[in-house]
Image 1 (spheres, rainbow, N blue to C red):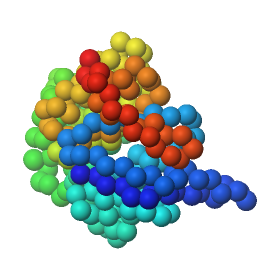
Image 2 (spheres, helix red, strand yellow):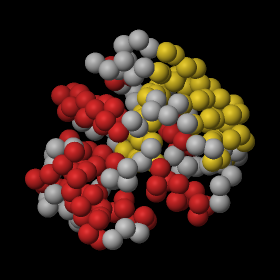
Image 3 (cartoon, rainbow, N blue to C red):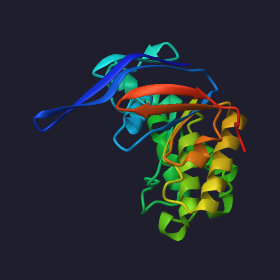
Image 4 (cartoon, one colour):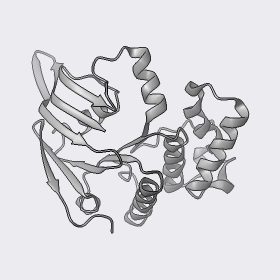
Length: 229
């Protein structure tokens, strides 16, 4: 479970101070699904970075399963990210010279698994996203939707408790957008993940049971009845 209390994030931009997050309090239950929406510059990606331990708050606590990511030493924070949190980004972030199989295996390197176990788990992850037969292809030989599937497999191969997605369909057309969301929602249910997604797409936001609207660094939670579909 996530518990955020009094989270502020301020940046220096030249001589100015930017208040990206302004006293955010938020609870996300284990297995919950939350979408974050808001205007550009409102703090969406900053909040996701806090949840992922990719950035630290200026003030406040970001507690995941009893561990405060805000104060954790860097080495332990890196370990928590490697073991507990999977990331999916808009730009896929695949290594162009590596095959799909090799890209997925990179997520397992910090866990110090044997090479044989890395290969087996990566193959299983690719099969779970429908790309078992494309394991030997490099990203340039795959469509945008297929590349995002590889990125999802890479996020899930660690068997994380949390999946964080930042505009995961932003580079895809509408039909592929729906296909990727169906996949993500299916994996969320299958693996009982805590799933948090940033999106500008209101049609996708309506599919989630909870919506966090963030404006000028402040968060308002809306419970939704639409859910999946």
